[in-house]
Figure 1: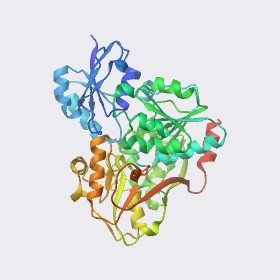
Figure 2 (figure 1 turned 90 degrees about the vertical axis):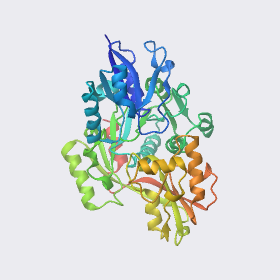
Figure 3 (figure 1 turned 135 degrees about the vertical axis):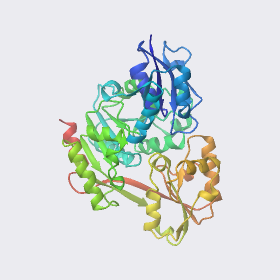
Length: 438
C-alpha cells in the first residue's frame, strides 16, 4: 500500500518537493497540500497537467488550519514540511501536532530536492526574508555580465494565480509582465532585473524551467525567496546575513541550512547595524561554516530629492514580505524618513482597508509603516484605498518597484531605493570570480 502524504507549504517549495520527490514514486500517494503565509492560496487545485499520471484529477490545496482534521479524514501517514522562514520552534510545534495524530513528520534534504544543471549555477540566498538578497542578486548579475557571460536569473516561485498558466514563465520585457498578470510581489522581484537587461524565469516546474533557461544562458543565477535553500545545485552558494537580526541565522528554518552550505557569507547592512551585532553574526559564521569567505556589505539608501522629506508628515510604504513573515518592524523607507528629517511618520492602521487591517492583526510586530501587500486584485485595491485615506503630506515608497506607477495616489510621492555596496575588502566581485573559476 502506498503511504498517504500531506505536503505542508506556501505555494512554492511544496510544489517543487512534490515534483522532485513524490510525483512519480508509487510508494507515496499525496492526498493534499496545505497552505500558509500567502493569502487566498487554499481552496485551489494543483492541476493534473502538473500532478502527473498517478493523480489524474489533480491534488487539492487546503488551509493549514485544517491539518489535524485532514490527517484523520484523509488517513495521512506522513506529513512533509515544505515552506520557509519559520522559527525552529514553530517547525517543531507543527511536528508535535503531526506526531500526536500518529503521522510521521519529514524534512527533505538538499540531495533529493536540488536539481543538477549542465550550466554553472550561482545561488543567492538568505538567512531571513528581507536581508538584502535582491540587490545582491543584481550585483552578481552585473559582475557576471561585465565578464561577457550570458546571465539568466531563475527566481524562487511565486505562483499565486492560475497554476495551469504558471508552469514555466519567462520575463524579458514590460510586455511579459502584462501578459502574465503579475502581482506586486512578483513585479518587485522581476522588474528590477529585467530593467537591468536580465531575462528572468520562474513558475512551478523547475526541471522544465531549467531546460528553457539553459538554452539561453552561460550561467544560471538562482535568486532565492524568503530564506529557502536553492532548487538547483549551486557551484557557488552566496548567503546574505542580516546583523539587524543577529542570531536569527541559528533560529530559523531553513536559513540555518543556508548558513551551513555557504561558500560566500555576506554580512549586509553594515551601515546600520551595531558593531556587537556584526561581530555576533561573524562569530556564528566562523563557528558553523568555517570554510566560507566572509564579506561585509552595505544596503545603500538612494533617495531622489531627499529635501522633500524634511518637515513633512509622511506615510511610509515598505516591502510586504519583509514586514510580514520577515518579521521586521520597518525597513528602508522608515530609515530614510528619519534620516532626512520627517516631522512625523503617520500610523496607517486607523486608515487600513479590510485586507490590510487583517494583515496588521496577523502581524502585530509591524511598526508605523504600511506593508505593500499585493497578492491579488483585492489587496492591490485595498492598498491604494488605504494610502489615499491617510492624512499626510508625502508618501515614501521603499519598495523594489515604484508603486506610484501602478496605483492612483492622491498624495505627492517619493521613492527610496537600496543597492548593494561592498564595505571594504574583500569585494564580492573578487571572491565570486575566484570561486567561480575554481
